[in-house]
Structures are given as C-alpha cells and as structure tokens.
Image 1 (spheres, rainbow over the protein chains, first blue to last red):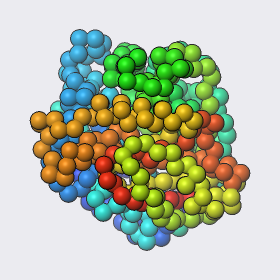
Image 2 (cartoon, helix red, strand yellow; image 1 turned 180 degrees about the vertical axis):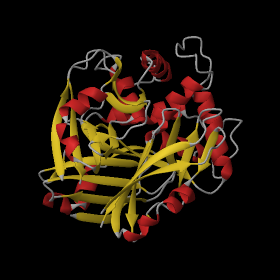
Image 3 (tube, rainbow over the protein chains, first blue to last red; image 1 turned 135 degrees about the vertical axis):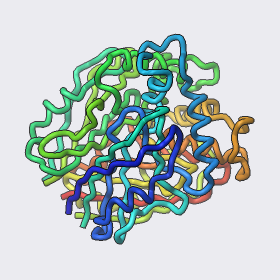
Image 4 (cartoon, one colour; image 1 turned 90 degrees about the vertical axis):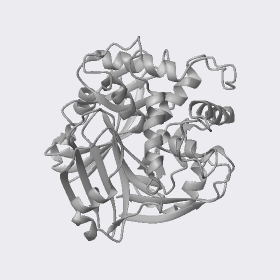
Length: 139
Length: 139
Length: 139
C-alpha cells in the first residue's frame, strides 16, 4: 500500500523540538503496515529533520548552542544577507542536518531505537508553520 | 512500478550547482507515477547531493565559501594527502552533506517545496562527469 | 518483495569502520532482488552511518581526527555532560553524519560506486554492539 499526505506542523520558536508524537498522531495509517517504510520530506530550506536523543531536553538546547557556534551569523564574507542575519546560517544548517528522514515501520509502529526521537530543527527566528510530505508504503 | 537507471551529469567546476532540471529531464518516467518516491544515489565520495534554495545564486556561492572555511585544506594532521589538497576535504564534505536523496513524487512530478532545488556539490577542482543511480517506484 | 530484519554489528572501538561486507553477509536476500532498495537505520544516537572511500584506511583515521576537532569535547557551555565527555559530541556527530542509508540494489547486489563503502562511525569510547534495522524491498 501507498499513502501520501501533507502534515502541517504547528509553529515553533527557533531551536530543536521533539515532534515524534505529532508525526505519529497525524498518521493513523501506520497501524495498517506490518512491514514498511515512512518517508518524511520537510519542504523548506531553513529548517531540518534529524533523529537524536528523545529524553533529556538539555541535549536539544545544546544542539541549538553548538550549531549556532559552528554556523555563525553575520560573517563578513556572506553575500546572501538581505533576508536577515538568521537566514543564511539556517540554509547551511538545513543542508548539514538534512530535511528528509526514512524510518522503518514494523507491526504498525515506527521502529526507532529506544532513545531515538524525531527533531525538527527550526533555524529561523520566526519560521512559522512548517510543512512535511509524508509517504508511507508497506504491506 | 520500479524503474532504475544511471544518470550521467555533465562535468561542472568546483562549487554548488542546481541540477533539478537535469534530473527531471532524464526521467520522463516520473510522469507515470501518481504516488511514489524517487531515490538518487551519487556514486562518488568527493561530491554531494543536498536540497536547498533554488532562487538566489549567491546562496550557492555562500555554500562554497562556508564549507571551504569549515572544512579547510592542508591541515598539518591530515594523512590522506597524496591525491591533492582538495581531495580529503572533499571526502569530509561528501559525508557531511550526503550523497543520497529521497524525494516524494505526486501526480507525475517531484513534490518539493517552492524554494527547494537539488544541489550537486562538486568538491574536487576537476571532478569530471558524475554518475547517479536513480530508482523510481510508485503507482 | 519486502524483507525486514535486525542486524547486530560486532562491538568496535571509537572511530570509523568499514562495514560493507558485514552488511552484505547478513543479507543473503539481496540476491533475490533484481531492482530495489535497501534501507538501513542505525537505532542509536551516538554513532552514525555514512558512505565514503573504501580503500585507503587513513581516510577513516582522518575522519576521526577531523570530526574530533570540528565537534570538540568539554566545551564550557555544554549542559548535557553527565554521561561523559564523549557523549554529547557523539550526539552531534550522529546528526551531522546521519544514522540512515538508502542504497540501490541491482541484479542481486548493492549498486555502490567503485570507491564507496559503508562506514560505521562509532563516536563513543565504549559504544558496545550496535543495532541496525534493515528493510529490503524490490522485485
């Protein structure tokens, strides 16, 4: 079976956010899949999707602090600067972390590791609602 | 349906290049897929595939400048240096950005965000023609 | 056809390790697939999977050296520090490099480039055995 739909995430502040529950709740069709794969594409170039630790929230604030240092704002050599100081670094972070995830589905559930959760990286100061194309296939 | 083919990209200079049109033109089979997924694997270890902004070309030149600073050439601790100063940094960039994309297909077209395009990151000074294995599936 | 199974990798020291052979040997079902895709999900948040050069082992030790410099331990602003100095950097490396690979299968074999191999990035000092969910589909 194939199932494809748009998921509109609620608006979130800049930072890393755990969205595993929001994704699962949007996809009751997961329960019909014994063996399969779920693909998520975030349709944006200034946010990201990644898997990481789902327990201690300081991991997510450390992500924000680390990537802000690795990918600084307002470097003098930046050319694409007319959308604000947060924009170009958001593009770099989006490509470093990626905007797409493929996740195994087993017996009607996402088959992630015990400590794995889905992070939305919101890299803009005011990114607004973000859109994901979810494609589920399996048997 | 399954369709798999090799796409040979034309040779490009070092830097980031928008290749969305070249990919779509190589795959007329996309039009036969109502709901599906297209997978692209770049068969190289010194170039990359990523999604990012498809409009302002300075984003792509800023990508080149930023990743050249993040991943410098000729660090004294590098061991794998016999293929030239651009080679080892190209390997690192390839793994940071990735060499594979999975893209949703809807009603015969790639279902990307309005501002998303496919970037080839050519990280060698003279990388030559690059090869992609495209795998399309859907119904 | 769909085939899904768990692969338990043997325990490895911190660093980057070539695991292409271990993956292929765990999956005799690959030979039944003429055209398809193999998905691998590493069910951990402090290790990674990436594709890179399969020949010269100094590339892999340079990976370890480079990512240790890019993602330093013991930064004074880190908050999530109670699991050891190697833990939080391991989380960052896991998201920068990724924990998932999708690989084309052609005529019963992984269709990688000549120089491409699958790397396990073991980012903990004592990570132990790592677990992959492998999902194979094709015809």
